Image (cartoon, rainbow, N blue to C red):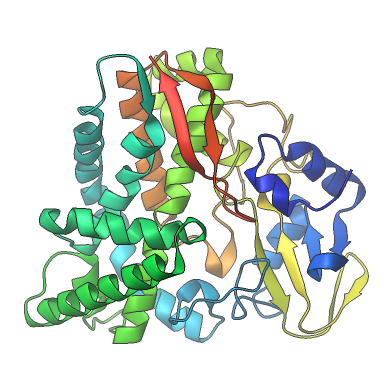
Length: 381
């Protein structure tokens, strides 16, 4: 068995490899990728809690990719702390809760377009557009610009599938559009995320133009693709665990705990990486400054040292301390929003198509070393 977990992210079942790594090789060296792999819950959590030793500033993907624009996910303290403090103003519980009605409205608009019965690509009809339209609403993008935002967003989010010229054109078009929006919000602020972040307040500074663009592109990618993937993974898992699905569908109050278990059992992001900022050790092994380590979240989430019966899908699981949103200072900025979208999306889908079946051969996954997503997910009902 080849113990390279990265290709498995796009396969039907990468977990046997993850289990071998976690149980027999908890610190594994991939020479061909110049990469260390961590797979136990305690080790992953410890790395996430130690940004002084393990830097995000060199990019958080295993291939070392780093965005051009200054992006909070690829920053270290103290700059990360200052920017995070400013950005947190836009993700207050009150603001996210107010958005819940809009999320449900968008979900119902999409579901209203479903055919009465038959087959449906739920990726294109629901799991992909829902987070994109929610993000547009959060940023204050008008309904009339939704199609443009979705078109450009898709080209950026699914960059591996986009021709380079299409990606460049989409980035340029969205940058030009956002520059106009920024100027409009400076002159006449509204009750949206962009207006909040362009203003000073007692608890946060305004972001400059480059920081604003970096954040908007991060939200567009990390804030939509991951939720799209979480919804798709949930649909696939609930088809495989139909008895549990019926139990959840019978009472919407069961959805929040079930959503956390779905996030644990097959998270949308299977891992992220860090770079050693100084010589250090992992599990007694010396790691030199500049070496990269990859945290395998999906393996850590099934660690029997952290979860009882980790291979059992239990939608009523309590104390579900998964690492699917990270941990520590880099804990996912939009976790509360993602949880709300997943919860509302599942509630509405299970109300509309409670007995759906995934069509045999109707699942296509996107190629990725980290994100476990789809390009097609056919259901019938």
